[in-house]
Amino acid sequence: MPIRVENLTVSYGQLPAVHHVSVTFGEGEAWAICGPNGAGKSTLLKSIMGLEKCDTGHVVFDGLERRDIAYLPQQAEIDRSQPISVFELAATGLWYEIGSFGGLNTAQRSRVQEALRRVGMEDYAQRLIAQLSNGQFQRVLFARMLVQNAKFLLLDEPFTAIDARTTDALLAILSGCLKAGQGVIAVLHDDAQVRAHFSHTLLLAREKIAAGASAQVLSEDNLARAAMFRQDIFEEKDWCEETAGGHE
Image (tube, rainbow, N blue to C red; front, top):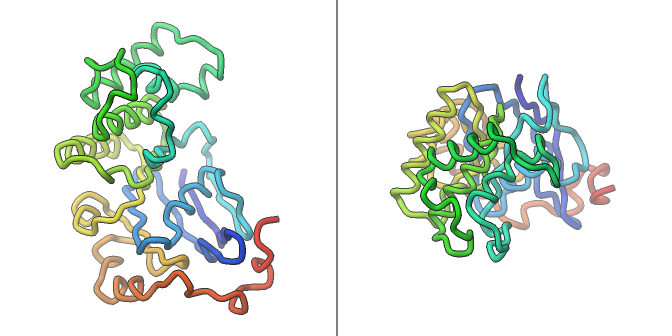
């Protein structure tokens, strides 16, 4: 049950953020999406989730439903001033099951408690999220993702601005998810971290530089090609006619 990205182009205004990218993410595989700043990594992840409109191409879920994919956004995209508790935030991972106004049954409450235990936040269940450190908040976001029991986990810069201890703990959790057969796709910046923990890499610089086994993709030649990327690498005259108009 792979996720297939086919000829995907996503543009903002007059520039493509992702340009004719094709890649297949296999079930149970650990994929890192790497590349320079502004290379379209987060845009690609959001496009897979249906949060960004595509100019060309599409994303195919073979045998998957939307509820089979859990998404962990960047911390900056979440309003931490909301007066909700750690438990309540983690429980929003059950949205597909309970809807906007449904209550939790005993089994679902146990799942939330177990997810918080896995990330080391069970003792903080009633604390307001505004009172958490960045590392603690990221653990809760992981719990929210884990409670879905999804087949694929998509994570956008999950280890940014958190301490090394928390990073190691969350990497261990992802390792457990992979052993359980879940697929992981994460936007990352640390090449050493990718080589150590992610078997597959998509190297992106708006266009696909390379995709496949991390050891081969993160070669000196490929990294040099990606490093040549600049925000102005695409000019309007270089676009395909079908994408030059932006979103439909």
